[in-house]
Image (cartoon, rainbow, N blue to C red; front, top):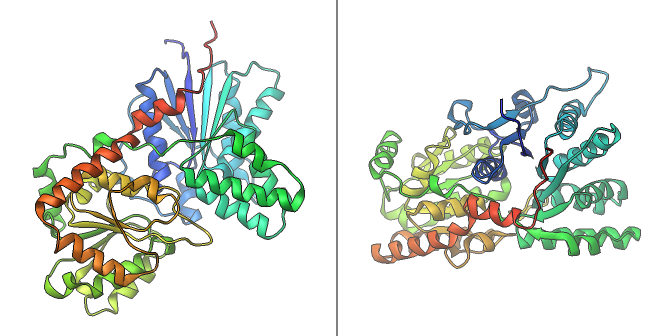
Length: 429
């Protein structure tokens, strides 16, 4: 067997979790295989733990396989019932210690600070404590929910320890990145709040050290789609090209699906055509949204898909008359980039309608119809403009420009930009 010269370890919530950063982890892993890494490992959570956590998950049989050379590990929990929590995290951290001390030069990339970067930080400390040779370079990528879900709540509650734990773990990594300028600014802002309350100096360090690395997308999955395959897949769903509106993301309050349903109901399009609204995805608000739609006169025109897999998603995006994701800020979540929007722009098809919440502006540039947050009337107007009052020529021109903009988020380009400032570990001879 050929000795492994270098390895990339990615720690994240991987498939089958419905999350843009789950897809990003896959894309960085695939890109690494084309950029000289001999081995790529994704260290993530057991399926039963993901199910128990209530995370929205894709159907397991719809998840595309990884390329040969990518190994997905789901370490078993450590300890028994006497350890009420942390058993699964202990399994992940322990496996990382083993990987960091086996003699293979390793880059460890964690997506989400809590708990993944914390696990990497603990594993590095433990690895050095073994006295064994350690050759690891660490990269931590922060997303907005790291701040809104952990740091901000700690600041509001005056809990220095929780905020310091996550910020210190982040800054202990060799390289710190955020998924957008918005996220970087948000981290610095909240770190400054911690400093103001407790006399720490996290904000200065964050300002100096955090760079931006946009999420990585597999552009090839969205370009040059076979039109016949698209038409067949749509027909199997009872749809036709340019014959439906589409929302495709997690079903949570922050995605604005309730506003979309209200806007669709008020639109001229709904009153003058039979075009349906397709809501594709899973999430904690799925039942509430179904109940909301069921009470409307247009209930039969609002269709919910909860079984869309990786292979079908690009075709659904490419075939829609318009893609609507009216995201809105919530205390627990703010859209830090908008991966689904960039994917839609790569796929072509009808216009994107969205808001400028969080980092969405960085994902769309000038290539979407922007509506205010919490404004169903504006959504209705935007739907009518996109579908009823735009010529085919204008739609095609806009789609071409949107795709050209979104190509900067292709996984190869993102990977190269991320790693150009990160020296590779030197192989042990």
